[in-house]
Length: 421
Image (cartoon, rainbow, N blue to C red; front, side):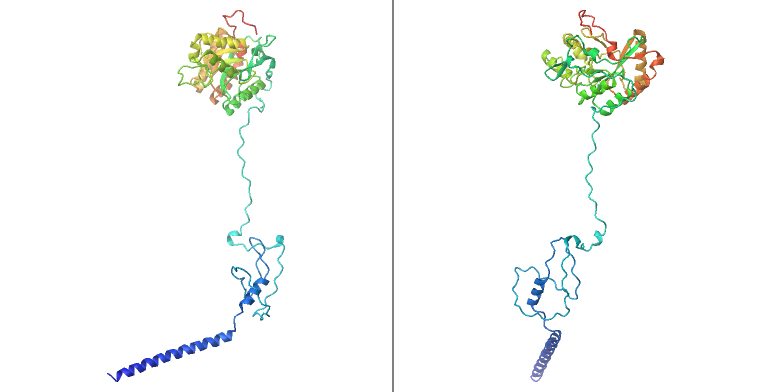
């Protein structure tokens, strides 16, 4: 065993010797290979070449540089240029062609397009403008269905006076009134039974107002809501058409306050000065109408009319300003303190084709029996306008005539000294 130990030690030392011999051979071979490749270019040469290269153009996409056999990239971010000694640079393995001067900005080639950029650039489109608003009612429109209608005169300053909220109607110094000044055309020698039609609450819907103005005959009377946003413009259109205009009076209705006639209504719970102030506000909404009717939004002022003294004071105020008054409650006696009359038939309760046609027939029967009749439609809905147009087309052969409201009014019975028109 003592003899085997030196033998194993000798074998270990021999293996270690062979290992180091291999290491020395590899190192020697690597040195010979590096000597054959030649020494690397010194750092000073790389810096000199980087400084001699032209500065990149200040464009987001610089022009591509010419392809070289061995391109030398510029150095990574350097804190500051390193001064270089003026030593001759050894020749490069491949001679570098001289750098071409940069082309002018407008002639520089664009950067190579990627597959996503091959499509033509998108055209910048201006944002689409908002849809135009509906045409304003102050733009005169041709009344093509009735080209021979005679326009009504423009508002007369002699029949207006300044009030708290605007211009109010008044009787002229020469006794003229709004009833005559703004009356529609009618042959008073015509002895046929006369029928008047009032279409109320005009002015809220542009589409419905335009349709009614274009299609309904000029002898139809229109009541403009005091809450309409363009009441004066609607009145101007009516005068151009030759149709008479009324102003709607918001009077306290049955079922108040569930049925609300608006914040300018004449109410039984308000004092006389408050109601008078609201009346002046309503009458100042626009000029050039023949009178007023006690209807707004389908409400006909039943509770206010039941307060007799207030109702009579309202009629007297209208008469003193030269206006007529229409009581919208069907079947009641006409106004006793103002020129006017009451409605005979409500045409659109309910607003169905069959019911409107039936009530128009009833209106004709009343006119033939009494000499005249007055019908009221609460709004210029499409079904109302359609039925009125079809009905009016056959009036001639049925022996009746359509008349504006100013032709149908009566003298107030209780006031013998009432001023003549």
